[in-house]
Image 1 (tube, rainbow, N blue to C red):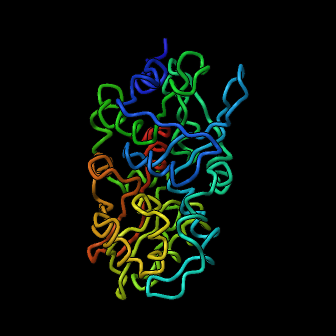
Image 2 (cartoon, rainbow, N blue to C red):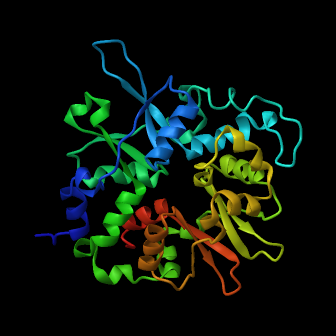
Image 3 (tube, rainbow, N blue to C red):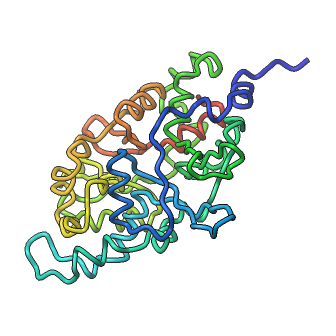
Length: 318
């Protein structure tokens, strides 16, 4: 008889609903104005909400995609930059009270490539169903309750939820595997196969957002003239912006994060000799999706994302 695989058993036997923390649910319809959607997100401290197409009476609302900070990043990087006044006082080229905040969110969600991968699971499904979307770079999945008939009862499960569960599920994954060093795990799953993208601290935030959007990633490192890591610029840094503040995206990247997201000026790092447990712990403590791997001079030599950690789980490195 083949020996049981505790890792596989845990993935199959744990229900999706069991790993979701209690959180306030917000959903918006595709005709909702962006300004109103952002107000609702900020009030609930959310960085993403599901968008539904409003159905006619007697029919079900259908899931259209996600409105998240990456959507806003793509919109800012390629949609409205030509209309943004600079932070240094150039004549405004758009009405900040109309053009940006009044954009229907349904017209924006197609900007985010992640919305082309629409995954939905049932609350009673096993955690193993989350592996496919989360290893493909999807960051959140709709969880349907009550058969999914009522969007108001649906929830979401995120990469962070899965990584948190992996981190605490040592009964299944084995204590010794968490102490494996980054450089050893890299040989199994190729953490550093993707080259980290960085920008100079003097480059504008909009240039950084464009580089991230072109690479289809959510964040870039900020380095000084000596190549030392001094910050992170990510889509999440846009959470506090509204139309009035869009012009500040023309500030140098390091000034932008210091002004709107001070925590991003203190990048979360680890070294190749740190354990995977350390990397996961820092991700969860600092609520970030990436940890920069640096050398003794604090220069970037790699980056590990939550997608990487989940891939490591699949391949047995964790």
